[in-house]
Image 1: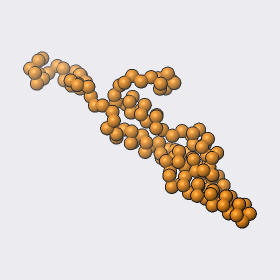
Image 2 (image 1 turned 180 degrees about the horizontal axis):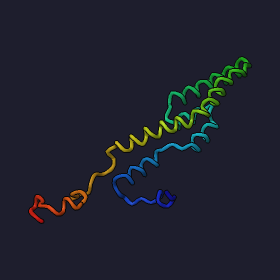
Image 3 (image 1 turned 60 degrees about the horizontal axis):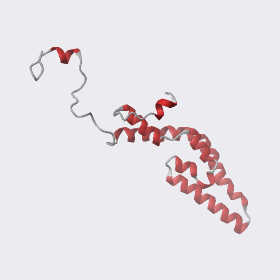
Image 4 (image 1 turned 30 degrees about the vertical axis):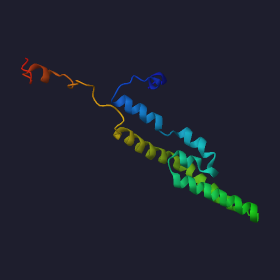
Amino acid sequence: MSKQWEAMDLKGGGLQQVQMAYKSVARTKPGAYLRWILFPLGVHRFYLLDRRGGLAYLGASLAALVVHVAAGFPWLWLVPSVAALVDLFLIPGRLVRINKELRLQTMMSGARPGAPRGFKGHYTEENTTGDGEDGNR
């Protein structure tokens, strides 16, 4: 889909509106990897909607900083660093899982309007040739 179509809001219902709502909340690979650079703060985990993981990174980094400053023991920085390297390879799978959940939430939300007033469905050959409820042929 071209960028022009993605930016266009036709105020329509149905799939277009759901897709636009999903695009506004979907997570992207570049976004996750750019936030991974700030792994000591757990920013990439917060971006991937993993609050506990983000807080764990933040706590481990603060503990490593305190131990480094107080005791002069810099090796504790290896714990969050190794975890960040592992996360580097786990980001694509987490993105797929998170985006599936976000798409489902968007599709199941009642935020989009229903059919327009007076909408009676699609007219096909079967429902226009026979006697209808109104007696027309």
